Length: 149
Image 1 (spheres, rainbow, N blue to C red):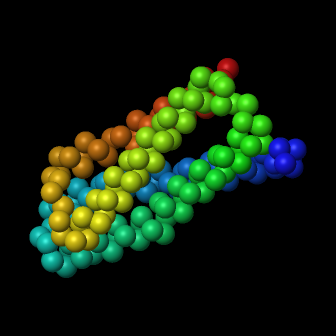
Image 2 (spheres, rainbow, N blue to C red; image 1 turned 90 degrees about the vertical axis):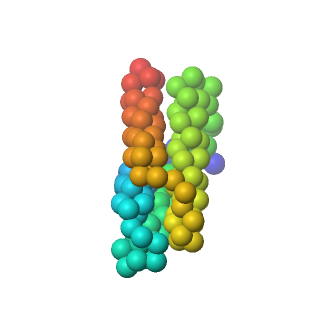
């Protein structure tokens, strides 16, 4: 199986990177929508528009991209016979990706709270949490591009 996957390693890697880029686009944009949504009155036309935007971004882009990122990443692991997991940089990268996935879950919960007009977080919270995906992305990219060498 790993021989077959190894033949397609470059394709898997390209699909993994494309998926990650799409996921990060949503992870960077969604909290910005939350910042603006906190200023809209519940039930207003603006609030309802933000609800649609947030739901579509989460369901149509972010969730499929996260799943694809994990799938292609695991296939890349399998192609390498999971040998990379023994390297310190890959373990740290995996922790960062798990943290990013947890943040994705927090954002999904926020979409649900906004949809039900039950958000309790303020604009400042979302401005601060908006930085977390960027920091995790920087760590992940440096770990992959610099640490192995």
